[in-house]
Amino acid sequence: MSRLGIRTRLLLVVLAAIVVAVAGLVAGFNLVLERTLDHNSRDLVHSRAIAQLNSLRIEHGRLRTGEAPDGRGSDTYAWVFRGRRALERPRAGATVERAARGLSGGPRRYRDVPPADTRLYAEPIVIGGKRVGTVVAAVSLEPYEETRRTALIASLVLGGLVLVLVGAAAWWLLGAALRPVVRMTRQAAAWSEQDLDHRFALGAPHDELTELAATLDGLLDRLAASLRHERRFSAELSHELRTPLARVLAESELALRRNRSGDDYRDALGVIHRSADQLSRIVDALVAAARYEAGGERGTADAAAVAEGAAAACLPLAKERQVKLEIEPPERSLRIGVDADLAERILQPVIENAYRHGSSRVRLALDREDSSVVYAIEDDGPGVPEEEKDRIFEPGVWGSAGGRNGDAGAGLGLSLARRLARSVAGDVYAETPAAGGGGRFVIRLPGV
Image: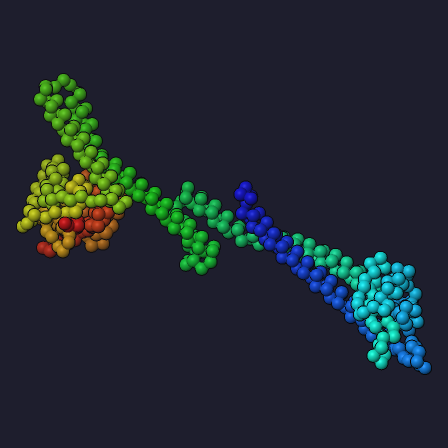
């Protein structure tokens, strides 16, 4: 059965149920019919015996019979016995004759004569409280047997026709019912391989088909989200690793271009080591973010130390852009409920964005609001237009202030910062400075 298709298995189940039901109905009908015919034949032979009994009379002390039925054209006939002597007898076979004579003088009773297919009934004749004879009536069972056989054959044929018709109807209905399921399954399989944006969108589930559609839509949503997450993670990883890898390659090519002194090689190795350390920290931070999103444990770190570490990582860009960073330390020590490397990976893209758009100065302030630690990063650049405050956090989107030039980055830094912050129950968003002008970004991280 497991090798058969679901349509075939359901059809076999339906046919088995129909066979059992039809067999029960046929058997029940024929049993009821048999009991009814048996009861009718008993009533008929009993009525004939009573009718014959009522036709008897006494004349001059002798038992006389009335008009007797003609047994030649009827399936009902009777004997009248006085003692063992027959006063009236119909034309019947020797077997029936012997059976009727055997009932004379006995009590009321029925007797079947199978060889002659006949049923007999004996009724005593009692006059004045004294038994004077016996009436034995007979009825042919052949018409009843014929009716029984005809009904059995007809019911079997009808049952077979019902089974064939129901089987054909079930096959068609099952095919019609499962056809949308097959089509939806194939569409979902094709969409999962080619385009995850398609959905069945049949509305709220109200039957099995719409429930399946909703389930498949949910599955496609999860697949699409997983694929987008993988693509975003790959893009973010390449974005974050691009700068330190470029620094390692440039420094190693420069060191290998000609023979240098030991101090020069030591300096080059120092730069390569710092870049490799930055690579390791980037990978650890991204892996930690993925672990936090999966429900992993979070670490803790000093908020001011995190700000200084992120600023140090952006120092080459600050020198290149000739922008000065001012860090305003908090009035009291603040700690965040986030691992230091991950927190630095959240702050660094925002600080780099401020360096790219600021003219000469970037300011970083720390404070505590309720249960969160807030980093406010302001620059003296053109600022962020109101209509772009959310759009600049989308992957691959550049704001109008920076444009898509060689210094604008890959358009992934702010998106990565927001995603990492939200993975630890924080957030990153843009604001307008109170004094007007410039850009202002706020980073909220959970405090401890």
